[in-house]
Image 1 (cartoon, rainbow, N blue to C red):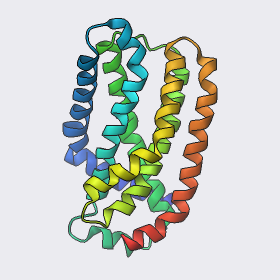
Image 2: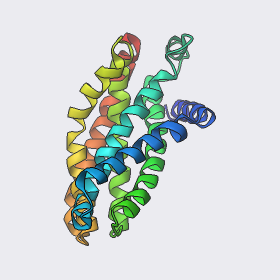
Image 3: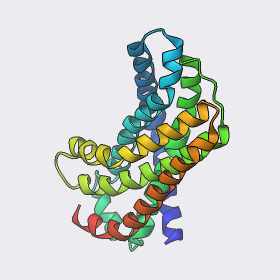
Image 4: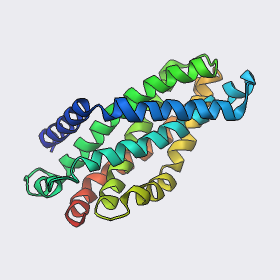
Length: 222
């Protein structure tokens, strides 16, 4: 399974690197959303700093939908999805590989957004260990849910609108827990975010397990 996961992850990342879709579309979209959130809240620096964690993670969720749609659009053309089914690769490996490719893309995006948020909202990024840990486990959860429900939506004609409807309600706990963990780190209370970090880790582990088991039947039906 792990060999197949590396093959799939490498394939997805090579496609994204050559197409530059993430760099040319998803990153600018996320930066514009972050800027618009700041404009909506006004010039009050204290209010912006207080809202940094929530605005950061809402932006990540919006960008994650685009990344998931792109991940499954790769197999939408020229019968590539049928080729993936007939490849003989382990279904769990395909799930883990696609999720891993999404994790890499989203972590790079979050690095850019964290720097942009610090500059736009004049926020000092304190509690770096908690910030990095929450980003890692939250991103694994987002990528697992996105890969699972991306497979559900991929076989429908309304996949562009169905995926957000499936994705956002499920990842609401990630949004809440990640925002709380980041808020604790930015308020110089890293101990207060450890419980939320545990919630994120439990969510990520649960959906990794569910996706590994359920992805095969979903891939066959999509």
